[in-house]
Image (cartoon, rainbow, N blue to C red; front, side):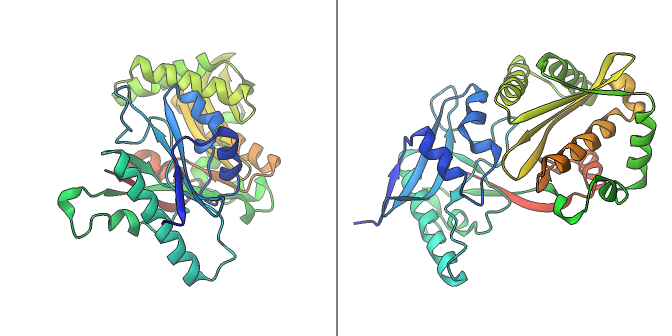
Length: 317
């Protein structure tokens, strides 16, 4: 008889309490964020001796099957583990490997497809890589490498010390924009949605009505729920840029940044982003997660703000 038991329908309060103790936690796996996605989901947990030792979110498509790619505008909805930092390394690694291996075996018995976007703090992907290692015809996980950028705020005494260390062009943009733009915090998700649509159009990317609904819902829930903050740059009282940050207990997440293409030369994006980083310093956050460094143009921009590369993995069946 296995020492572990799976619960495919975990209670939300129990789940959130577990998430708050896991090193792999992020705002994207708390139920308050998940409820903003307008999607069906299950909270799956693994118990050992009455305690949760692992968990994962399963988000379902309209067909009732688990999604086979990351959900739009989300990140880090992969395997979460209980904090085992107090164990010797050899015990911790082996124990966690076996738990995840069991967890995967139970999930794949119930579902033939699925996708997990893992935290960069999950280091051991071998249970996914070795699934059905000797029987590949029974289905294996595809493992894709991705990167995000993490700005460690603890490295700097204050915002001014940080600002002096970023790429000089960012400081110049910030100074220039500060002379012509006004900043305000807003709860109007329509501003973000409109500028987001303009940004996609400029980039030649199709943006569906569902994307619009999702952007508005995420923004509205985050601000109303007290775990999000949106700043807007105004030029002559007209919004030309907007940024939405989400927060958990240690990390500020740069989820959305959108600009009016006709005013890109104002430096409004850098103006807002640096002000939000300053705000994170003042809130006592430990780090900024730039939520992906996976495209050539946006990747270099985020690195110019002193983001350190962290690799994470998407595993899909």
